[in-house]
Image 1 (cartoon, rainbow, N blue to C red):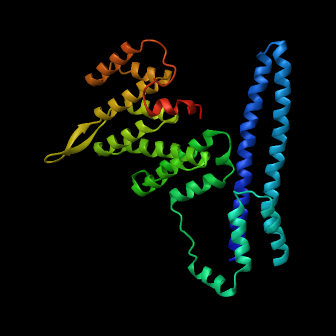
Image 2: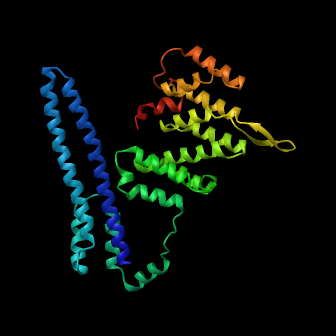
Image 3: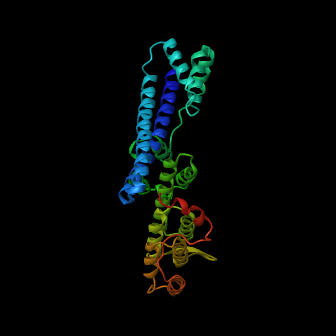
Length: 324
């Protein structure tokens, strides 16, 4: 149990280091922005911006040092010899007053002080949880350096790879597990979950013959407020296909026209240049309903499409974070 407690404490300390590192990355981007502002500023403004840049660089260095310090603390957990040495180190960590790691420290102290009978009971009751493929992906998003970097392309690539695993997109439990992580408090876990959810539903929409299930996935995609979904909606709109749907006498052949209409209407709400280009391309669609809807949208909004329409509910509320 001591070994398990130490690993849990080390994980908590590394998560704290990751937390500080995210601040470091965000501040790096802010420093770059100020640098651009300096190049574009007038002489009287330049001095103030240089002072601001110097302050940010000082904070930046402090965050780098703090990240390294938490990493060192995580490594040191496994290097303490003897119970007393470990206990002293745990007390030092507690004195830091860091709420993020405090529960793991207190649990380790409890293990050190617990009688042998209690340790035996804990060992008997402990059963390692077997992670599902979806669970492993979410866990990796919490710990792997590449998935926690500032480049979203890495997370997008991982989402595509996961969705293309044989059978995974048809696994309702895996999909539900990924969708649940879309509200995770960790923003990087949340983003990977959103990107993966988009790719799983994309696979269903473009590959599965059950058009009722396809329509459910398109409706779900239409509710997602992340820029990555726009390209998938464009793909759906531009991909007419046939399949089967439920009728009174069983399965009957049909097409995905109603799903494509949902994609078109949502693209109008997204109102980006890519969305307008996709809608414009449907003016000669083989589905007359799609043609009429596309023409009407372009008549109503003939100018540039430069961002979500106001008054579109969730899109309007999410528009402040669309740069992600």
